[in-house]
Amino acid sequence: MRAVALLLALLVGAQCAVGQGFIHTSGQKFVDDNCKEFVPVGMNAWMLLETVVGTSNNLPNNPLGLNQVDFTMQAAVNNSQTTVRMFGHGVNSTMALQPEQGVYNESAFRALDYVIERAGFYGIKLILTFGDQWNAADSKINYLRWGDAVNNTNLFFTSPTIQGFYMDHITTVFNRNNTITGVLYKDDPAIMAWDLMNEVRCECFPQTLYPAYPTNVECLPECADGLDNWVQMMANHTKQVDPNHMVTVGYEGYWNKDDTRVQYNPGNGWAGISGQDFTRNMGHAEIDFTEIHFWPDLWFATGTQQQITVDQQQFLSNWMTQHAQAAAELGKPLILEEFGKSVKNANDGGGVSANPKPGDISSIRDSHFTSVYDEVNSAMTTGSALCGAMWWQWDMTYDHSVIDHGETQVAYLDSTFVDIITPQSSKLLGLAAPTVEGCIKRNQSPPTATAGRRLLSGGRHA
Image (cartoon, rainbow, N blue to C red; front, top):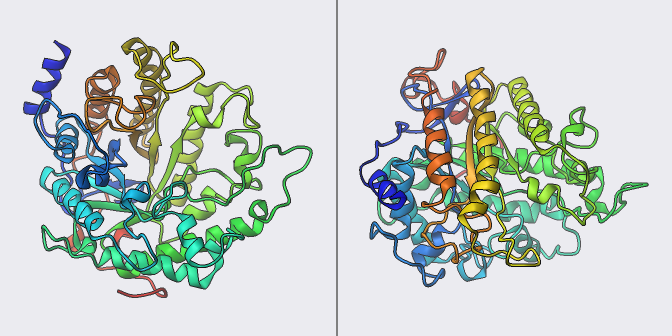
């Protein structure tokens, strides 16, 4: 019965509120071109390009008979999801958008063309990343190799050559003419915003911190300074080439060890020397909105230097509240851009991922997602800067075996999706204001009136 009920919801469910035109900010709110409040609630779906090209093989058909991209967008729009965050590039070496410096994979670009066109068709807004900290494709390590700087990873932020490579990539992406719609990416309202890089940070991963902080160059303040300068430079360049879209950083949102809010970081000090510096990085005028990620399974892992005794519910509340206060001080809205919960099958042994039991999903993941949504709901109800949340990650099929065996995937038949995500997202959408006070309609504003349309000096031009 659950499958039948959800299938009907997918087919005939009420379409969620669609933001008209480009999304931008007005104070601590997101608004569309008509000044209606836009609430970015949705999913992370990071391997959509791979499904279009077919490098993710043996994807089972879903009950709607749609391809995986259409299934994703249809499920989103009919279940109160307004936004999809995805990598605007490949995840692994089989699907690099830029396999060599300045050389682009046309198949990957055409896949991105298709995803953007489908999002526009369904009325879904996209948050796209330019690059990645972690994986083998379109990531920091590629730029370091191209710049002959793998032995000093700080040069990613400070080398004029590597900076130029990254700005050239941004320009190429913005000036891409979609082969389906004929619209340049920089002119496409289906795109809500750009992340400069997924979870960018310094390569500082100490095994132990005490009695002293590490002395390797990646953990010194110079790297944090370089990262901050890089954020400002890349955001400025983004605004020069594409004044239509918003830009943010795309990371976890740790505070530097010298910040007064460092006590709210996870762990026993490692986050404070990661190079991230939330208030400083997000304070640049070119950054339109703030965002954070929330990963307690990783941050409070047992058996590592990160292990500490912590009340995770209290940490969640502090993490959200303190970032919202910092965002309000900057006069910008805040999105919880990533949150998820690992589900491991206790019968699998050794902590290895396996297809989770429904009971595991309900008892482990559902309560965590409920807590997160309750925090966001409370924030929005009280006028906080926190006004959106995006969960990790969408199972674009209906089979947990495809990507990570259901460890962090959320499938459309899971209780997490049916009983938590859909009704909680609908509740958040119901809090949106019909018109945001003080907002100036986009087509009536001068180019410098709103954050999403600032024209800034410096940087490379299209």
